[in-house]
Length: 464
Image 1 (cartoon, rainbow, N blue to C red):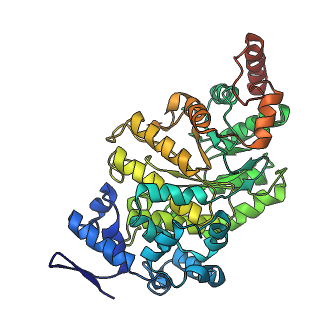
Image 2: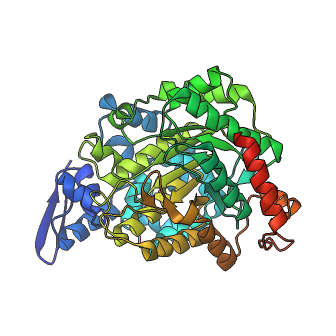
Image 3: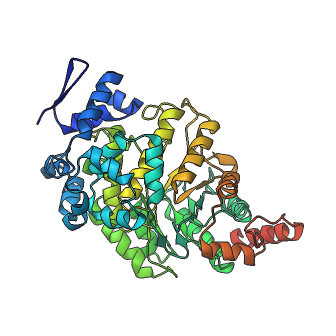
């Protein structure tokens, strides 16, 4: 089906809805690399005019990736909740944007609507929205999950404590973990990206983090971010696994490049649930995504990278995850060239994830060969804090010495919480006060030499 519009006597014709979506996207290097970006600002605006008039129902009948060719498309269509969709079924994409910004789109209404929305619908409305629209709508969404603490409550910001080490040295991981805990970080998860796929190494990190959590009764969860098949092996070997991690993408071919199928994720989730390690809930999955992953795997089928990203969220919500985060600037400038593109992508991903009912956070980050710097990350940090992001990363000094990229630090989380009046997970906040890390006003206490020496002593015993 062709789409067309005229602007100032110039006729613009688009081959199909997939092309309309791609041309309507804000400019970004990944779509240019794929050869599917608008050739001019005028063409981009023409595509947005067309997209605004597309009925939301059209996305249920005109699949961007054919139903018979892709299991993500099949899952999107087969799991669509027509009853939840009914409240907006009569709207166009432009009318949907107006509704989202209206007083009718309350927190409760958006939660009820989420199962009725497809990734393509929310990607479409993001393309015709300003940054402030993405913030205003996402801020109204509330997605709460639980394992050993409660994440996503209104006015709350959680932090993944990311104590990576370039040689998987337990002492180095433990030292960074202690640093983060003393800075009030770690309520989302203590999550380590391991260098090695060695099962003894993965098991050692898992056991060390579990001993730390159990010894000090920390109301948080740990995760070793290895491939899902390794996590299944850890569970079979009776390792104390809390969360199952996996990177996922928005097409079947992308996920196959990761060595992942929905059936494998089903198996992993069932294995983690069988351990019954959660104390306040049973959300056991942790997913990471990122714009550009489908294109980098030659698996985007001509679909723009932001829509492919949103399609990954449809797979994620199948598993009721504890955490989902877009690693927004990690893949590199080939996909998001500079700070402006990274900021926009982070806001889009958060908006789309929240509308689809996901507990979404963001790794606010960039690689050193991108045209971006920490000031750009500060900007996105504040914007996402305003938008109600569920969690961010806490990396020592914001410099991940294992993955070799720049993210956000423990200090950044303190800044955002203090500036915006945000709190931690209530169970974790109570633990920090009990340990005298924070005071009754949830501000950090000055570190005492005795407390630090005690922490270092405990660290040594953990890795002895």
